[in-house]
Picture: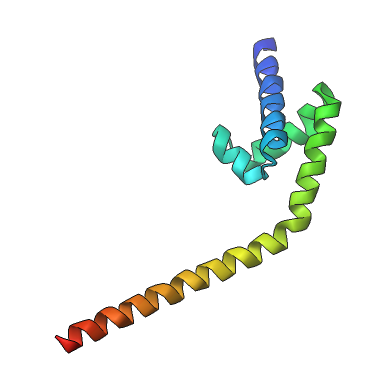
Length: 102
């Protein structure tokens, strides 16, 4: 039982260090470490607070910043999505025009 708790504490610290070093979002930290976003949240908000409070404060600062910028990232992602769709549409139109000329 102690081994499981120790492993979870160690994972919480690894997640915390990853977030601080890469200024990562919860989603990117989860993808990089192979755990779910829920697990990342639980580890950095509960376990890390108990095991390494100074690292917890650094992580909270980054996660709070990410949360405050979330709406901006969403807008950028949406703009990029529609830009790519427009490029594909133009390419398809040009291809169709070349076919019709032939």
